[in-house]
Image (cartoon, rainbow, N blue to C red):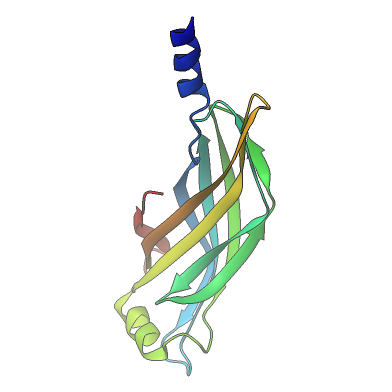
Length: 166
């Protein structure tokens, strides 16, 4: 009986951070100009994020934000409301980010990337929350989504998405 209880507790009460995956990115309203002074890049970045909770308990996450970076500079951010993902379930959510290059962006690099037709971007989001198992065990967990990708200006699409494991 003790072995059964030990096995049950090791499986059910093992709590891990939920997995985040970037399912897709859609680019809308893409506008750019390398010949203007300063050069600019504006668009709407719509990311579909999958939250997979392998735990037996519910993951409740807080309000958070996601950002898009160019050459280390934040060029777009958006907040999203907290929510929950039930145990052993997967939820998808869309996050829309208005991207606007700004004066803090290295204009020389941006001009070169716009002329090449490929702009390297990084997206980042973190989900902070608690996993609760059987109303007994609660653990704070943080899941991070950190991806690099290329924006192809000719096809107006994202390609070469590479996300770090969290």
